[in-house]
Image 1 (spheres, rainbow, N blue to C red):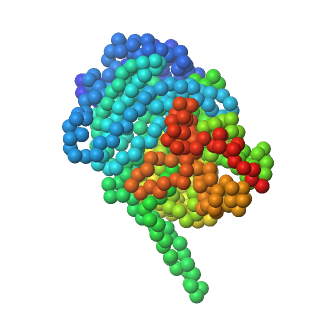
Image 2: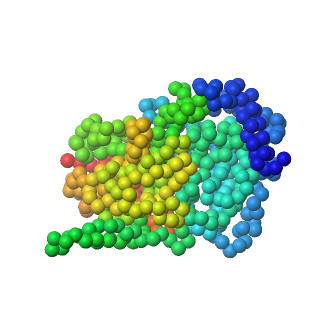
Image 3: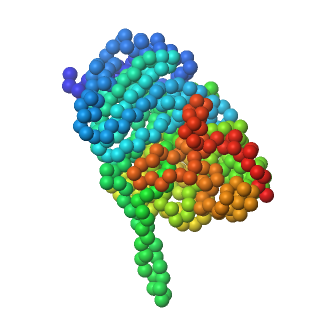
Length: 470
Ligand SMILES: [Cu+2]
């Protein structure tokens, strides 16, 4: 049997076995309403799959066939990337929770950042008490799919590759011998790798005009390659009312939520901003503020703060099943790069298909609030609205100085409140350090504690200690 036919056979076998295991007929027309309750899945299911055999994707030896030792001795920089596969319960909008699957207790998983030409040593560990096996497929790699096989509870596996192409790349769980890949990924097992170009990023040119003696002419402005950076990852949730993955809804593209970095409306103002801007914690300054209160701790929404005239670089990935029409209300995307090639400049919107990423460079010229959206109205209203605040549009500087919160006026509110930890990637060769980070993200409490240990600010503890702001 040649490889292609073998693959088709494998997928068919997976479908049949999937139907047997999960008690449903695995066809497009009949799958409506099927759902998998992860809390009821146990290791026996995985064991059954193993015993049935015939489900290996390509190579039975699996996962560890690349020679990490040989790659480590090539003189290249070796970057270790360690992840664990963990099923946990996490909150969703509306005060409910869902059965999430995560890499290392956070959704999205930790961001890997390397330089083009580095060796990535990817290690996946599945705790012994985890309910299912997991895999890992990094799109930054170029290797046989056999390396992405699943790892069983209680086991650790590893593969190595050279990150040869610069850009932003998805990584995701590859399921258990393919089965459940959709469930694992759409329940939270995804993240990104940023591969910085070996020669660094390029200066940003922004087209402006000037006028002299009644004549308008081109007046290009250049910004240094160093930039303040954020990551935005788009995805959907497909859930039953009980918070379980709903495969039927997925097959029909009926999502129940649109998330950015795991949360609906995770980067919008909260009660603190209401208080600062309107003088009343209960007067919302944005149309949807579902994560308002301090009691939400790491889940309280936090806007993204930037300076005016600052080079901002966004790493944007579409992790989901629906297109993302990336647009920032009130802004123009000054440069769009995919891989290491500029695709567009001075464009209003750029589209990302599933598993596609881009780097957006831009400068916010005017003080104000700007909403980055997926310009699909269904997505905007189900969670894909992210607020950037540039400069000091609300005139808070004098009040914050008077109250003693900051010693002197600041160019962005990040100096007072920090930027959300899960939207900020690790530093790269052209990164501007954020003034401060606050603990924000779809994190387990353990991960939130680690972020605090790393220096991120738990605003839910700090805000109540601040002096009153008149
Ligand atoms: Cu998984």
